[in-house]
Image (cartoon, rainbow, N blue to C red; front, side, top):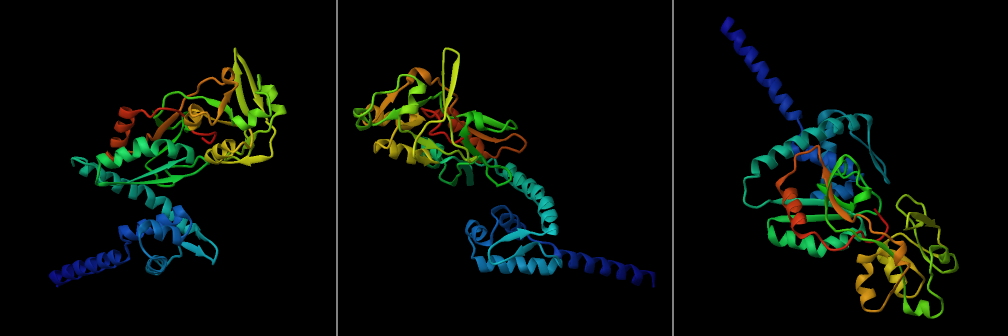
Length: 327
């Protein structure tokens, strides 16, 4: 009887383990939930995960039914975590990060890094680093893929699942590690030769009030005031102009068309200045500033794929500075 009782207990434990195992989400299911939460929708998450939206929706519904809890509130226009879903994701994310870190550490002995490197950057910075840096990275590491997402606004790269970002050094959060990518640069005022045929070049920042300028709207929503400094005197000018743009590439196109004066980095305009398509003014009023940097979290393990990029950045040091005014 005692032997039979012990066997019954063993069987009961096995049944409980099997039931718990059946309820336990797989890693792919956990990744699906956290990706939907991060991107805010099934369509974007399905695109990133490489599955169809319907398959992803069915998988999450099956998981919710198995757990007997709703993780997402769904409408035809939006997807949002429930309170239970928020608590679930908050506990799952660190666990997934720990698993990813363990996998990365155990595979670091490989001769070449593998996987996908996810980077966030401003559009102007992306143009600067794509050819000299990221193309070389892909050439050296054929088992790597690189995904670049551009945002004018500074985003939380850790919360959004990015490995690193490229921004102007002054814009990098203080809890991040920054590696310089470019040498110092400077913002300069430029205009087309056609523009200056009809107007005298400004001699001091205050003269800009009598010119047509291409204004810049920052990611924060405010209009950027052009900043100048000379011999300890600092000036900010809210320049006049009827054209407002939020991206440095568009500003460059506009100034080349003669739409007015623009305030851009010397890196962005140097080719056009050298070719005579643009004319620099007020140079003595625009001191240099720190350029772009690669930044990443100092609180997480640095995987081999990111460490390879850091080493390449230190080797190449791209010429120039921040493209445009966006951080």
